[in-house]
Image (cartoon, rainbow, N blue to C red):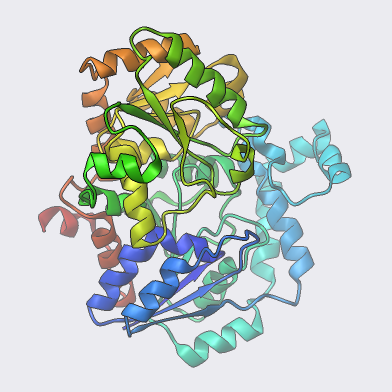
Length: 454
């Protein structure tokens, strides 16, 4: 079968690499179309590597809509505000985040009459009728008619100005089965909304099903749970280096335990926070021998250029994305050999949970904004994070962990079972998603019972 994946940016391929590999291994031809990112990092390294290895996989740039572009972008951006105006949304202040509107327009949309209009379901329906009234892009239609894939899979399809949604729209008009896959745990709470409802929307777990229905009006019978393909890599990975060799590689003393600090996309200079955190550990009798390994946020490595602190190592200095075998191995070692993972609000907590390491979140008043985010409640509700409301409390928690305590272990295991691998700890989410894609391509009904009985 011919399977088309469409990503708004090549970086999204990383979450579905294992799915694509499985489909290619099963003999299907996979075509990947993607947009171009604005980052300097070459985000398609893993895609390039896989194409060199797998012969029945190709990639190329996606086509951009030209006609009616301005009107669609405007109505989609308006719709992207509507989930945050839902009275049940836990983070309503995000209404102006990444909307694409100018500041004067945002001010206008924030006045009560404009908010009331956007909250009105009748008005939302009229905006969606604009989407329906505007026909699919003719160039994309012709491309799909020429290549005739058996199914189109797209991600993330939540931004107003991304073009992967155009392929879902065109494929639906041609009667080609369509799938939208949720890319990340935070996307339903911090991004936009779905502008075209596909044949199937794939999410990780029941919690995300509920939010897709409540805030994005996706029909429940059109949603299928797959687990999180994003994290399959970490379930079976084994260390390629022993602990002493890894410590020497990054510049740590092999004779000292270390904690891994994972940086976030915070505003401001996180180096100041880490400096205070490291000094607190150094002055606490229980943690004074504890070193700190800092992993910079990929797009913010420069804040560490002049950073120097005793028993603290910044590695890798330039900041990297774990998108190649070597980079994934390095990333795995930072969790595996650390006694715990510390951060503010980061996807690394999910990865650390999979690798089964305690997680400590710094919950000082300075980071109240991050911890009030709607998606962070998934982690708080699961109660697998050790919450430290001061650096002294963080040192106390890490001291207990050094002494063998792991109070949240069972909650962490339950979170992984329910949030990341709801089909079973031995059931790869990539395998589940690959089967869903194959079933949709054959135009067969997708039944949960088939997965349970396997």
